[in-house]
Amino acid sequence: MKKITAFAPAHISGFFIPKITKKPEESGSLGAGVCLDAGIIAEASFSDTTRILLNNKPFECSPLVDAIHLLTDAPLKIKLNSAVPIGTGFGASGASTLASVVAANQLQDINLTRNQLAQIAHTAEVINRTGLGDVPAQITGGLVIRLKESVPPRNKIDKILTPPISVSWVSFKNISTKKILEDDTLQKQIVTSGENALKNLIRKPTVENFMIQSNKFTNEVNLASSHVLDAIEAVRAKGYTAAQAMLGDTAFAIGKNVFSEYEHAGTSLVNHTGATLL
Image (cartoon, rainbow, N blue to C red; front, side):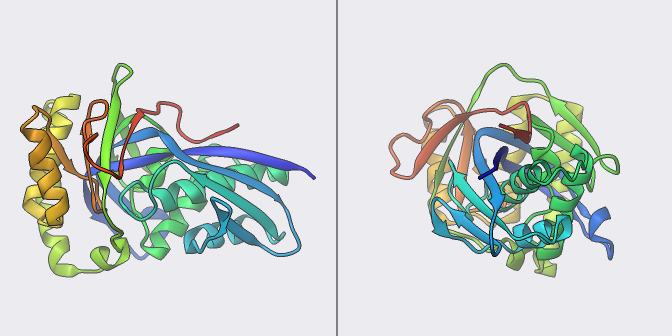
């Protein structure tokens, strides 16, 4: 049986500015975030009915299903393996959707380009309110500054070049991205703080300043749980600047094994390739 495998990196967003219009393909977000070598591997194969499995268990992922239906009418089996927690601020739905359409495109010889596949995955994410800026970063890789919403060629992206560095995290529980993205009061504070963070990062585009602006954004938008705030404070005492992974119940910092005292902690190198066939 023919099988095609693809990878998409996890993406931790440090801060963001939502830009939602009536056209989902033109919507998205500005902001900055970092892609990880830890991410989602998707294996696509033909099937009698469309089925999605995550770590060998049935998995519901609305943007993934929508994206596959946009791509093809053929029933497919998608097997996902995740190296990061789901629903905790790693852009897992975006990575799952993007890796799946990359694999399905190759499986069926549809011959869509990188940008066309990213557009399908991104549109599905926006419609389902599961993410606004993950796919544009995940198709690119690196420490990404999103200067205009949507995906290539509509968007505008820059990168902060980095040596091989690690990103550490600790995750606690799931947060509904959709619920936050549909709260008008929260949106106003997010936009104000996000715009300030982006301006400040553009003035000084360094890894250290990315973390400083992300930490400031965390404090201003007030979405972090007490668990995340405690973790941020604990590693600050060790000399690290940490922030909330947007939008998730996760704290992250630059460095290896920064949160090693916690049970649900992890570390990954920054990914510079973006989504790719394996």
